Image (tube, rainbow, N blue to C red; front, side, top):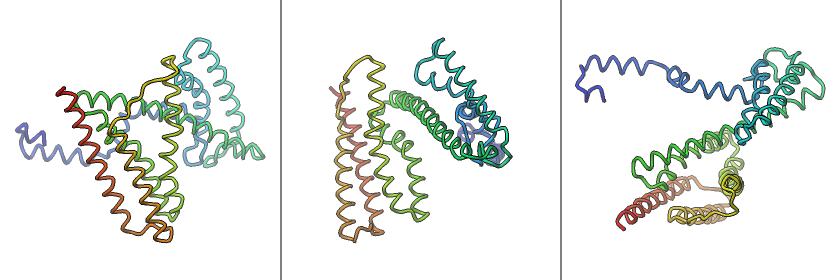
Length: 287
């Protein structure tokens, strides 16, 4: 539409749009995300058969200690030397253990014995930990970008948290829980819906505040209970009461109409929270 508003010819605009739509999305996004892909590939040891490559595995074992000390803020000369030593030892050990692997196998399967069962599990745990490092690093940058956009657009930070941050943080859970429910694992899906927020409130907040206080060198920090957070707590408690009540009345099953109630409940909460955020901003600017 910008081409039309600029007054360019209709045929030329149609040709540009058609050409852009015919280009696969991956051809556009992959070059932009290539540095991130390369960094993840060099620091996360993939051991599954689908994405396993012996060369990449050895490279990731060599590089992950450096990424870890950079994440922990220990990027000093002794830390770098120690990380290089650990990386070299891990890469040599990985090269020896995977020397007998065949294409299409998981890591260390060519060696056989107990190592074939134990080593992939260790690599999976290591890959999980490095994945958490990447997620936390990216999340930190996303928070900074959202805060910048909120200040640039004069939007309340609470409103940005309710929209971009909340939706982006929930997409993984949304698709994962939805896939489990469609596959018939309903109990697992509904348990995950409650376990994920509980994990975020207990573990994520605890680790986040611990890291923040350690960075500041303080033992406490003042936290303000905003109206949006208080409203969210009220709606969360109300929803939990509703789901327990309906489940008990319906023989511990949720009827089909409950999905409409859940969507309407979130819509009401979102509307009130956004209105509260703009009202608070207007009040602070007026005063």
